[in-house]
Length: 436
Image (cartoon, rainbow, N blue to C red):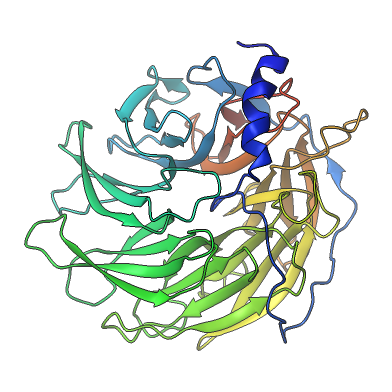
């Protein structure tokens, strides 16, 4: 591996351009003023649980620090065992770590190259042939860029996990998230898009028009920059798939898009911050209070922004938007986590309550004491009161988390991916499995 000075010589010019994309956003002008309630902290004293999990590195470390922009736990070959599919944004690749037996893994496999800066991967059977295809969101350039260089790929699975790439849209605002659902009720899977762009971006959807499985027409829902994630679920109970999107940049807002069932969406802002450096970093969907309605988990931990030095902020942490029914949401602060990213809902201790696990991408690694947190478990007491548990203090800069069964026990294990653009580079990883 090159020495730290050699790596820094490569990284510094990139950082001078203010690293910015749909996972790590920056250079935020003042936001519109929100009329919603400000955040309040609900953090309890953290419990030291650093001996709870064992750490196991998977795959192959390269010569340079990894850029694992996203990972997805999915049974890709449908053999009943969870696998790991992930994006390596620096190498422009999508790769697969296959679980061959509980706790055993095949050598890491390349699924697709020349993916133009892949930053998100999902799975869906887009051609209705019974196997899982892959949806890859591409930014082309992960540093600030206003050019229309985004692309979306579908990797067609031949049934034996050999993949043919299809470009379904390109020359568009940089795409950072893509989810499949039948958005217009015609029986075919469409695609919801989060297009970060830079100064210009959109939330959009791609209508599956056929006759080819790879033919789509794009419809813009909202023209605002900084979309980080878009998620799909029936949020208002009308049995049609709706969208929720997180916007960073100057907005720092969450939007709900109810669907009339025919692919016509209206935009409703359901939360926003007046803090220009709030650091919105991700959303996911889970029924946190188990009332039968999908809620939204939300992390704010982006450490780039108006401040000159990337790093944690005292307001970073987790919150959830409780789905109160009929399209209503109520904001709750869960707890503090400097550099918070990738919130995941999972019954981690198997007590019947949904807990939350999240990683930290911006702990204070320049502090000599390094009393930092890299991975946190927020234990739910069943009444949505959360106690933070520190799972590990290293490695640094984890921006993506997945959960699955990787030992045949039925208990959830964690998988993390590291993304390293900022020194020091002495505590790094690539794909790491955390199990009991």
